[in-house]
Image (cartoon, rainbow, N blue to C red; front, side, top):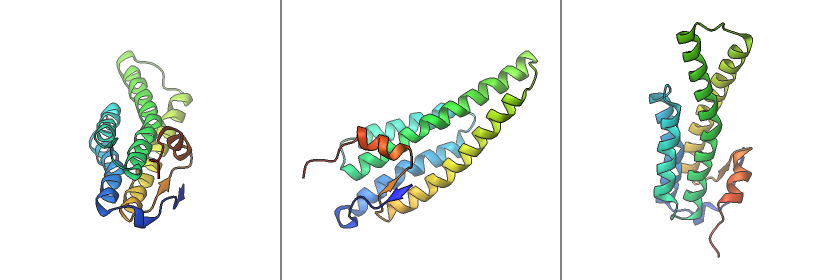
Length: 146
């Protein structure tokens, strides 16, 4: 995760607050709707849609939060469907299942911690870039012309 791409003087308090909400929404919905992984991505998507016309700082962090949800939703959905299949169809529990389960738990914990960190830092007007999703977000979200 890298920081400091935009000058804090260029970011208003309202924009810093909006950008921090992008991460806060995903964190709160993750805690509330963990059994429903798609709920988290839908909430983040609607937040992005509502803020896609705002300045670059808010757009960037809304989109980065949304993109980071894709991996989490895929892992959580796979774990839930596999667990339901095991319970309903009396399937054998395998090492692959436990590997996926522990991978999903690990990524959920990491995403929770990173989202909390990003929430705090963007509220302080610091421009946070995730290791993988930051460069991807930069390709999809262009700053306005100066």
